[in-house]
Length: 254
Image (cartoon, rainbow, N blue to C red; front, side, top):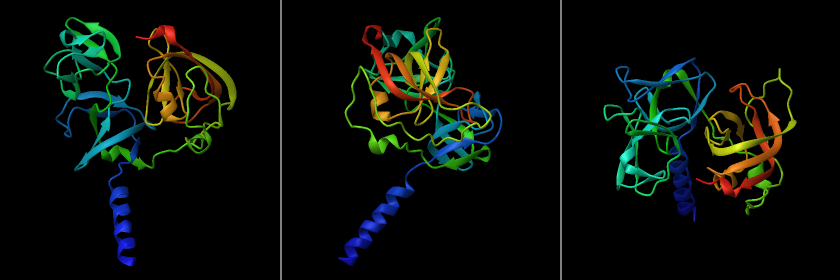
């Protein structure tokens, strides 16, 4: 029995040690690069306080999931109505084959098309798209878990979601008024880890949304109206919305 407990204990240690933490950017306008080297191309810049999802580490560099504001491009001839047609397709950081590969997507993957340039389509970075940031300008943080995960029901209604709101674990901005009720209308898309965003018709981010991941993931790419409570945190100028009610516009699908 003691031997079995020790085995279980070691297994738990192994599992926990392999969990990658999120990272918070500590510098201002820190370069997001195509490879773990100062000689690699700068693809974009991350702002101080921004939270990024860690994918891998090597030496003094951290691979993070490309944030939603990054440019991601695919060859238009291999995409039909937003669906990838070849078995595998490179997603690049710019509109030609000289740009770095962010990730590879498989046939049938649905891409969110944002724009077009010649024979290339600009898309929202697919899951798994990676860029590199110097660990010198980041700090590791524990993944955030909202209280709603403990109390909200497992089932989800596509017409309305109501329940106990999660506790916002991001640091509040004390200079701004908190807890106001507000509603936003737009397309729901992923944002930073643990967060979603509502995008307007002209592509502007209206707010971030913090709720149950399994419920909100069901509604990605749907046009929604979300009513709830807004809070302001120090790491972003966008309000963070905690949903009380979600109404889905099923007519406005891609």
